View 1 (cartoon, helix red, strand yellow):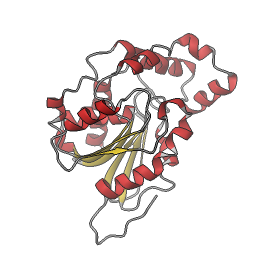
View 2 (cartoon, rainbow, N blue to C red):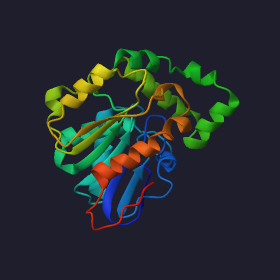
View 3 (cartoon, rainbow, N blue to C red):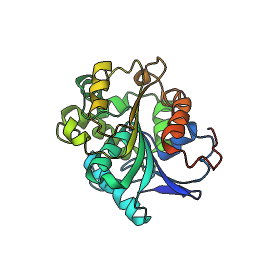
View 4 (cartoon, helix red, strand yellow):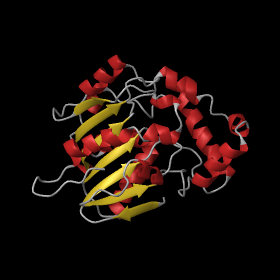
Length: 254
C-alpha cells in the first residue's frame, strides 16, 4: 500500500473514493490542516497501491487500513472518508470502534442500493475500451501500474452489482459505532434517497453524530473534480464540528 504521512500533531486519516487516489484530497484541502499528522493512502488497487489478490472487498480494505494504523503505531485517529473511503470507515468503526475518535462520512452507503448496482454493472472491460484516448490517458496518469490495474478497478466496481454481504450494515451494527460522526450527502444524489438517509442516521447511537445535507447538486453525474470541489465548504464545517482541537489553539479554515 502506498501512503503519505505529513505534518505533526493529532492523526487525521483521509480515505479517497472509488477510482480515486489519495492526491485527490488536494481539491478539498489547499494545504494540510494545521495541527494534524495527515495520513493519506491510496486504497487497495488504486493509484500507486497494488492488489495482489486481484479482487476487492471492503472487508479487505478495512484490514489494510488497520494494518497501516498499526504500522504507524496509531492507536486512535480522526478520519474523513469519501464514498468508498467512507464505506471503509464504516467497516473500521464497527470492527474496532475504539480506533476511530471522530469521522466524516461523505456519500457513504451501509449497503448497495439498486440504482447503484445498476450503474456498477456497466463498468465492463468493453466500457473501458470505448473511452476516448484522452479519458484513458487520464486514468493511466492516476493509476500507474498499467491498463490491467485500471481494468481490475472496473472489475471491482462491476462486482458491487452482485455483492450482498460485503456492505450489509444493519441499524444494530451501526449502533456499535462510538465515534462522533457527521454524515454528508448531496441533496440530489441519484443513488441515495432522503428517507433512506434519515434511517441510516437513525442507526447511530452516538447522539453527538449529525446529518448534513449539501446544497442541491447531483454528485453522481458530474466529473471527479467538479464532484469534489463543492465539498470544500462542507468539509470545513465538518472540521469545525468534529475535528477541531481545543479552543485555545487557533483554527485554520480550508
